Length: 176
Image (cartoon, rainbow, N blue to C red; front, side, top):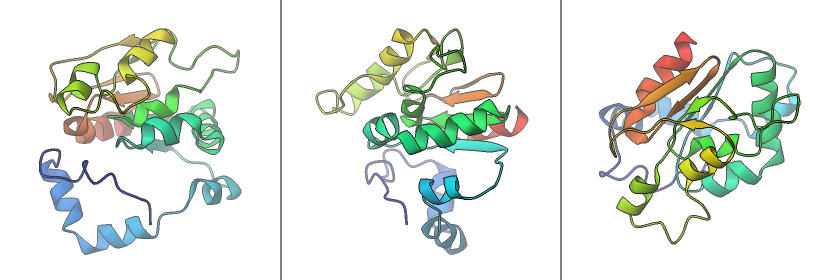
């Protein structure tokens, strides 16, 4: 039963698709029976897509977890799709290509912006601004107006800017 960032499921951030999901008992039951990252790593399976959802907790959890890094790098290095939305691209920060360069270097990416972080008043709580970290690693960060739907794909890497971009990120991931 993965933890949910309560702010992310508040009225301010809930999209129509998010509301539909949260009101679907079958979807919630499936979510509650999700496998942990360690369980996913222990299975001898290949995944076509890995999707890193957002929420403020992921800024720390995803960027510091060696298990998350191993799982996502494994999916991507097999030539499969790696997608992330909102704060989810924090998972990309410690990831590298096989030659040791940052995964995002010279790739078009997006994620929760400094302006959006300041808009929710959490700039003093997060340890870094995601868009700035992606730039520091050589990513070509493509951002649009705060809270607008925006997702980009660069080959098998797909990223979305904010909660409003979740559906578009998923669609691009399916198309990649």
